[in-house]
Image (spheres, helix red, strand yellow):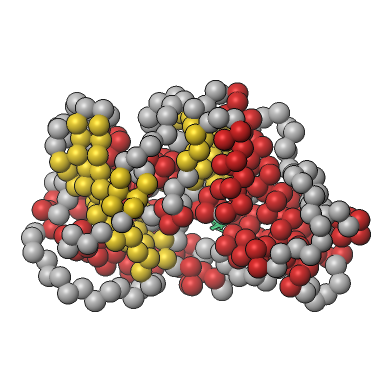
Length: 403
Ligand code: KG4
Ligand code: ZN
């Protein structure tokens, strides 16, 4: 152990501001050789969704301004809640923080020992707020700082284990080698891991991310932002009246509907693990152009069902192929799109057929949050990685995994 945190109980303050959620978390971790135990004491997420909804996507300049406004109240709330001994996992109303009755009992430096911060990839103006806040705390309080890749954070949300009664219980954890599918608004990647912190990106999107495709299709259908939850809700709300086919190229057996609403499964047979979703979005656009206007709810629902099926089928097929090729013992699903019920269900079923263990975080830990960043840092500490001197921690919007 080279980082001085051996056999020690320590608390991590984790900070995440890579996109449009300002989040801070306090994690209590106890490292004993090969036996890392931790508890999420608080995980505060201030979402900017309402602010960006009218633009149909994240407006970067507004996002960084909101982070500047929110970062200190969010950190304060994370610290005070951890001290209260109240375990919470809450989503604060945007900019409306709870009235805190608990007064600061200790000096700030007594509430945590280590700082973890997302340094990339993400929106540069957003990342800079979290990174500079973390650096300032590290510099003034003389605390070690761990720089975490956002995608690494999403992957490590799978190592939290099951949380019941809001307490972290390390139950069954993923085994190596594993493959992880990371699907969010900004990323779609398949990652092979031989061991902890050892990443090999084996597939990526060549254009739009899966979540971005959900957001763009929702915009075409006037369903609001973020598109993923809106599309899956629409697909579930209006169960299709037409008979649906089994998994295959089209859901619809009715010929006229089928010819209008049959979307491609992009690159499903490409023989590699890369993805492409921009053609699928264009196929939806052309289908909409051909349909009589205004689009009724049922027609919109049919488009949502078929689009969601096309994305899910492609993601599941490639992930299962990669698990076979890399002889994975576990399949991990994470990132914002991992909260999609159909994707969770289909990937679980296919993993079970392959006799491979399937993991996905509980839904509120799929979308951006600081707890996942803190858990990734806890593993780095447990594995003896050294912190980065604060003056070498920099925001990098194109940060690559494992670099
Ligand atoms: O990980 P995340 O919170 O932020 C990024 O790092 O991008 O992911 C946000 C993305 C958005 O594109 C949103 O539409 C998508 O996750 N998403 C979903 C669902 N919930 C969120 N996509 C499909 N189905 C959902 N239920
Ligand atoms: Zn994310």
